[in-house]
Each structure stands twice: as structure tokens, then as C-alpha cells.
Length: 534
Image (tube, rainbow, N blue to C red):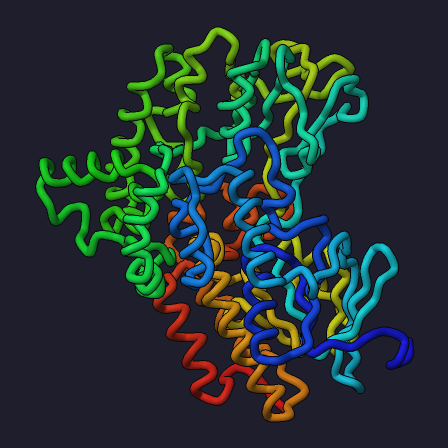
């Protein structure tokens, strides 16, 4: 392909979620020529695709938005935890406010990117034949970019509808009066069950591992309350870079064993009533590091959850006496009425540990014990998370190797944003970043600001190539995988254990936002340590 065959940009961004939009704005404000490519037909990233019934964020609305006063002063969420429609409306609002769409090409699914060492530019190609060149390639794919569909025999035989939650029809799917199977008990599974139970004839939940879900404490937010809350927004946003998860709250700087039983119980009760991620990320600091401390949290969760389940047999499956894994080492889902759903006559539970699925039939699902008839099978089976999005694109680096080949022996990404053999490529919200432990917009802004700073600095200085060193990659990889042993005790997507055949290792930087920011800023201050620049 000749140099004049396609248009050339300073940077091409992939993905129009929080990360991509923030980076587009920052680079555009610095005067650079930028294009954003998005597979969907609108802004929002995962929130364009997440349109299944009950889809809702797990961060409180005041934290789940950009921190720029220009944006939050004129925007009000009407619920503490906004639903998909409000989140989509928020993205539309941001788009119009900042006039972002003029630099976005929608309906463009990127399939490949190749680095030209001679010209030091990337050529990016899309499924529809579109191609573009750029000095910098900036994937902002998110950790939930590649849905996972399990290989269940007979899937194509089913005469009804099989629907993955991440690929839900934009026009919706009517479940009224239908017999619904929900396979999977992650966030989307819980949310679909809560909604389907209201209208379906029958909902059958197929559970492999109990979801240790936390109470959401959802409620409406009035205009008056929103105005009052905004008085503290600036302080809340300033606090994000000082807390482990980029929220406006943090762990208690005490061990669970430093306090009396009475004080501990009062603390647990208070966190439970606040709900959301408070029992997870605002608890005693050792609850994710010490198994005895963690067991105290689990036992509390179990007892409070069982209070809501009428049938003791179901209570043992949904909230087992002994934990299926340490609580909190899988990302906890937030629920509103999930456990009460199992008190309803039209909701039942199949324990896949005892009676696994044998196959899908023409009329439903056959387990080792029985066959169940269904009209709709919902696959709430999650994602090939963290690395799946990157590995689904044919990205070829400076020496002709693909990203799949580069990471075949394990992920290695300096600062969680770059990797050797792939010059001029920075990932936002990607592998070995703090993404899955961080409030989404916080992580998008922290990483996006850093990438924009670096790209701008290199362009201004006339530098045309930056590449992480293999040694820096390996140091970061080592620091990422050497985390609390408890994370390896759960088959979670944090460590790739939800995908058959995927390498089992920690893929998320779990040392907290303050440590992350200190390290990425020191890298620039030290003259791009861990990189070769020329």
C-alpha cells in the first residue's frame, strides 16, 4: 500500500467508551489530528452493546462520569446506580457537548493493524475495507470487548432463541410469558433474572458457582439531592487518585483483628447498609490479603444473604456454609432483588456442580438429571476479559510477529499500556492495567491523560518512535502476577480461568491507583524509563 493510498493521522484511537472519548478530547485539545474508530453505531463503548434487560452500572452515578465540571454541572443522573438508558443518554450528552462525533467513524470494526518500520506508522484496516494510517495506535477496547460463548453440544439444534447478554438485540427481546433459561450468574445474569422474573412464565437459573453478590441499595436521586451532592464533587474527584480503586472511599487502615468483635460487627453492618462496593473496597485493609480475615467477611455475607432466602436447600446453594472461594477475589456483582427472586414460584435453580448440562436439545436443555423446555436461552457467560479484545485483532509489530505470538507465553505490558515489539502503541484500560479494580472513568482519565501527555511530548520534540523494552515488560508482568495468593483461589476472569485453555495468571494490576500513578509519572520524569525513544 503506498503512502498516499490512505489518509494519515497523528493518532488513531479504537473504541468510543470512556477511555477512547477522553483520549480523543485530550489529543484534539492539544492540536493533533486524531480519528476514533468504533464498531458500534454510537458512542458508549460497552454501554452501546449492553442493552439486555436490567443492565446497570455498578458504580454510583457521581463517580461514573467524567470529572470535568464543564460536563457534570449540567448533567444529573436520576438514580444512584444509573441504568443503561441513562448511561447511553449521558454518552450522547458528552458527545454533543464536546462535538466528538465529527472525529469518529462509526460502524468500523478494526480487524488488523500493521507497523511499518520504515515509515514508523501504523496501517489500520477495518472489516468493511476501510484503511487509515497513523503515527500512534491507541486501542481503548475495555476489559469486556470479546463475549465468551461456551461450547455446549447441540447449541445449533435449539428451535428457540439463544442470546448472549453482550450481543442483545438493540430493539430488545420480549420475555413476557416465556420460559427462560439463564446460564451464568455474573452481573448480567443477575440483572436479567431480576427483570425476567417479573414477566416470564418460568425462569430457570443454571449456576456453576455461587455469586457472592453485594446489595446495591438502589434509589432515586432528585434534582435537589443532585444539586446538593455536586457541592462535594470536586473533592470527591480529587480523592480518586489517592484511593486503591479510584473511588471516593478507601480501605480502613486497620486489620480486622485490631478491633473488638462488637466494633467489627458495627463496621460490617454500616458497610452492608451502604451497599455497593463499600463492603468490598472500604472494608478493613487485610480482608483481601488474609484468609482468616476474609472468612469473617464471608460468614457475615452468608448470614445476611440467607436471611433473604426462604428455602434452606436453596440457601445452601446460593450462600454456601463454606465459601466457594475467598469473597472479593472475583469482582462482586451488585443486586437489588436477586436472592428474593428464588422465593417466587416462577424462579428455580439448577446446581451445575451436581447436575451439569449435557447438551442443548431442540426444545431446551438436558442435564445429567432432567430435561427442561425453554423458549429463550440467555447466555450470561461473560467475556474473554482483559486480553480478549486485543487478541481478537490481527496486530503485527515491528518484527513481523503478531500480538498473539508476542503474548503466547504470558501477558507482558510495561505500565499496563505498552509492550515491546509494538512501537507507538499505547493501550488504555488494557492488560496489566488497574482497570478491573478501578472505577472506569477514573482509570480512563488517569491513563488517557498520561498517554496524551506522552504522545504530545514526542510529537512536539519531533520523536517518531517509542517502544517498551522487554526487560521493562517483564518487570511489570512480575509485579502484576505476584499479587495476593487469594486471587488464585478463584476461577475468575481476573486470571483468565473462565476461558477454557487460557493461560491462568493475574491480568490486572492490583497494587492500587496511588502506586500506579506514582510509577507511570516517574517513568516520564525519568526520561521514559523502560522505553527506547528516537
